[in-house]
Image (cartoon, rainbow, N blue to C red; front, top):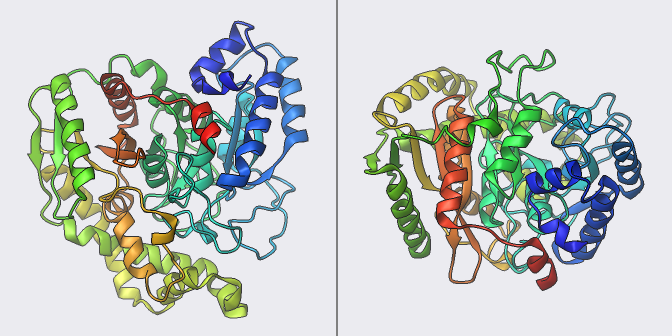
Amino acid sequence: MSQELDWTLAQASQALAEGRSSAQALAEAALRRARTVQARTNAFLAITAEAARSQARLSDGQPRRHALQGIPMAHKDCFARAGERMTVGMRAQRAPDRATATVLARLQACGAVDIGRLHLSEAIAGPSGNNVQFGDCRNAWNPDYISGGSSSGSAVAVASGSVFAALGTDTGGSVRIPASLNGLFGLKPSFGRVSRYGAFPRSLSVDSIGPLARTAQDCALMMQAIAGPDEMDSATVGIAVPDYAGALAHAAQGLRLGILQTDDELDAEVGKGFEHFVSVAARRSGSIQQRRFDDWPLLYPLGDAYAKTEPAQVHAAAMAAGPDSYAKAIYTRTEPGLHLPAVRYIQAGQLRPIMLQRFIEQAFHDVDVLMLPTLPIAAPRISEMDMEAGAAVHSLVPRLTCLTRPFGYLGLPVMSMPMGLDAHGLPMGVQLVGRPYAEARLLSLAHHLSLDLAWSFKPSSLAAAL
């Protein structure tokens, strides 16, 4: 049965449709795998076995009506479930939520099976997967290395084969970074493409929700279910949702590709991996343009204005009432937002549409998709990323997020996909950046480039090593 967990989501869905497996069989296999790898990865905060079994039985008893029906999933524990308490990776007790997050409700309506709540960085604040309150989440390929965050458990659960897909949230890279470090495809949609209703906020002006999966096709199936307007989230847009899965076959044809050049220094291994990826991409698209954005150095601090002030507003009362309830790294990154001048916050908002227009005009000139690494460094060991060591957090966070946070501020869609392995056999990722609402284009390009790269791995082999 563990071999069934090596299927992609699309393959598992096909097996269910053809009667070669059942929702109950997949759920039992997923639950066994989740329990097996939990001791080494710490990907789950809770495994909800009985609820999952009940959902799987219900799925098997109904006519098949959706590609996600009967598929085991689990999600970052910052999404509301009616009558349950989310942790948001924090020890403080929260009241049970009154309603279910829109994205979870949409997956439930498709018949997906939810097997648990996944690890995340405390207060959705941290790119490493470190969590003082619940313990660190560890890389699915090697538990001595960081998982990435803040959607740490989402990436590790998918890569280890515990689930076929998971949802994460992305403000400054929280889907893309763990996707990169665990060899997955992770999509940060355009701002407003997916409803955030019922998702605990980090930064409401920037937050996005997106899927993590083992293929671009699987991400497309997830996006088909969760994208679209929602009257409960006024930031969602009324643009029609395309056929993401159907577009995989043709949306990548004739694309003009560009390399976004920044002054951020890359590790030698990352640079070598990216060079190889570009050579593969060039065989598909022909010549690849070099592009720069003159105001690139401004995007990180502008995004940081949101990343400081809006979380400080969310946590102000709790920090005042019990500062010791927060890990030092979380408190020292959040509390300064209370003292940031309002003028700076307003300026960041006023400049945002201006910067977006400039970026499209300059960086996307004669280019449809931009490429750059997801992280400038190869996967660090957990021992190298002690977020609680003095003021280290203030240098470690930019080290991991310098290439991801700018696109959160701009609100552009970005897909992180694998580009190869480093010298330690750990995955490295590349970002594909699109124009607003070009998710279908990114999914299709990632799909075809993954075929060109012959990228694949078996979660069962990773689980056996754990």
